[in-house]
Image (cartoon, rainbow, N blue to C red; front, side, top):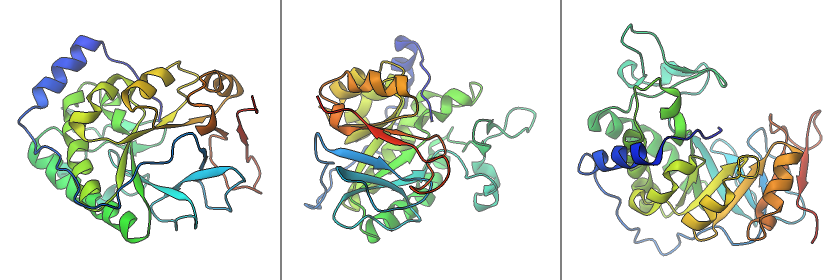
Length: 270
């Protein structure tokens, strides 16, 4: 999902408001937890698995897929929104509605947002998503990518940045307990809070197109992988030397290699 921006002061106030409302992350005692290798190629395979292209050391796949043998595998989980057509999987009170009772929907993906406005609801939602995270670990993934951290920006003001950060803190604790590294997905405006939340690296979409790559690289000490969807964005990301090896251009539907519409490119050799 693409990140939107809030004014810095407002974001800071939201994050301060979150203090004391949810448990803090705990350090993992699992010595196997490790970050993605720096300066390595990446492939983004959410639309379906296929043999990884040459040079792709890091592979991101859906939590329903198997990890790629011999690679560093990141497990995708839709953590902040219900999957299309799967709202019945969630208790009714964990689905966000406005004051008139109307569902709050991410129109780009036809996904209803989760209601994360109270510590109790965040805890219950995190327990459910935590089961998926545990499954990622059991299946052999090394890390997890919880998507839609920025869903609060699509909530018509019902959710705050503090709600999202407090909830993701719970997911980070779960990931670490299972020996997994955890990524921040997009949401550059909250990257400065990554240590407080307990995040280990970043998976970004179009940081080149939005000129945000430097923000993530500074916040995560270079541990960033980037997916671009336009040639212009690819050029922008490839212009950042520290990021070049970990940039990939994909088609918006992320279809598997060999299917109609498949697109994949990387930064040209310097």
